[in-house]
View (cartoon, rainbow, N blue to C red):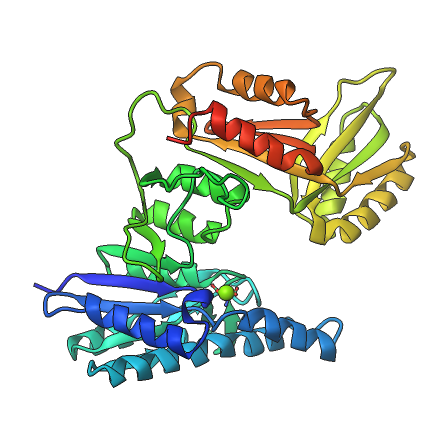
Length: 406
Ligand code: ASP
Ligand code: MG
């Protein structure tokens, strides 16, 4: 029978400098025993990718995306070679590969390509030769041999996809925090590490602003039921297991609270209340390449209504341009925008069987004099858009009310 395979992914901060690379190599060698095989996925050293993006911006205002992929993919190529050398120094056999070399085939959407297929032949061959395999994360290749990247944070996706392709028993995501916390420990000192969380909950937390893993990678892990272990490369502590079902006690309704300040709000006043208007507005915004999140439309009055929605702050300029154009065409009232907002969300699959969770959230915000601007819900989360300056206060209060301090 083939030996069980463990996939270990190390993020940028875990391989930020020579000492860290040596420490990671040590850790890899400790995990490798006679009874298992290791496949490692690495991110670029420290902030390399950001630095490369900045460098390109100094040369060109709109660098071609193909060339951006050529550029950004070099970061991970450096780190995988260095980690392979460091492992070899410790007396284990190792070999590094780029995404293309291990057959990570993607579509041709440069800078956010989707994985279509993974060959993994080179990996299987190297494992048979008892080598530790080190793969450059974040990158792939199209059928026409063009280098692509998988979107920022894409090394997580490489790790999860490889874990699936080679049937690994677990995929360990090493980072600079100890795991997933009940909320951001920088906001609430009493935040606790979560032992076990479901894919659904993790996906919800990641999509709502928890920045530990790339959401796309969690989606893939959920689809193929690949257990993930998020842990620190700086300590030996167990981290957080992300699994299909957890053994939670019945009385837990909320498992975590997120706070996201990356969005801005746009409001179109005085929109005609008749069929087709919302369709027209959001078609134009989507054509401008802007993703819209929460949308709220007021009840109509005198055949008019207001429509508010949120977009990423980084897309605000593009979104405003498109919105102003459509507002002019539809002869609506003013277009307003507000950058000083925060999205505060409570997440937990226990909400499916608990009543009054949303009411408790609103009550708590009211007691702390936090005004709610917009509300959205899913079956396992409730989000409120509030004024940004009140975000910390709100998160602290909710963390306490939902008993997350343990
Ligand atoms: N280096 C890439 C980034 O910073 C990929 C990754 O770190 O996962 O986005
Ligand atoms: Mg990175």
